[in-house]
Each structure stands twice: as C-alpha cells, then as structure tokens.
Image (cartoon, rainbow, N blue to C red; front, side, top):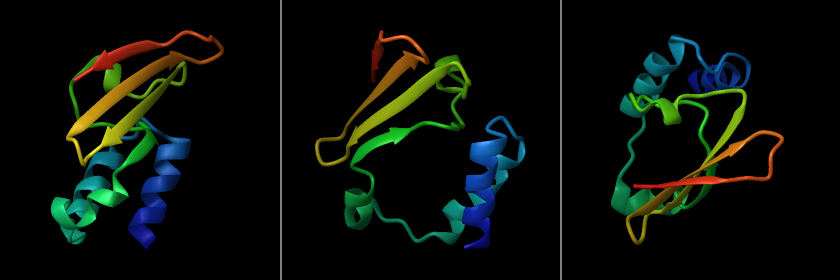
Length: 94
C-alpha cells in the first residue's frame, strides 16, 4: 500500500513529477491485473492526472480538466477536455 499512497500523493501534489512513471510501472508489475477478470474496475469516469502518452492533450495541465469515460465491455473510451472555469467541452474520440 505504500507505493499506492506515494503515487496518489504525487498525482495530487506534483502531477508533473518524473517519479510517477517509475512508481506506476512498479505497481503495474506487482499487480496481477487481468482484463477479462478485472474490467469491471475500469468502467466509469476517471480524471486523467498522468499519462505515459506523448500526445500533448493527455499531459496534465492545471488549466484543463481531462476526464476519461471508459466502457471496457464495449471496448470504448472517450476523453473530455474542459478548460477549468469555462462551461465548454472539447471532445476527442479515439
């Protein structure tokens, strides 16, 4: 549980920290995740605070709310980008 706590603290306090990727990779290796068994845990709306992607819109920014809507049963996902303080949405579909 120590690595999970460390990761959560970094995501909340230092979302651009270089340490996040190594901690996430360690947790991924240590966790016995199986998509067919654990996909219920993925379904829902998630706030994206970190990504290993090179896409600039997936990088954390304090000015943008980046929400991911995941539907693993139908193999669908959607990113919603919303500038904080504005009531507009930019929808990017993958």
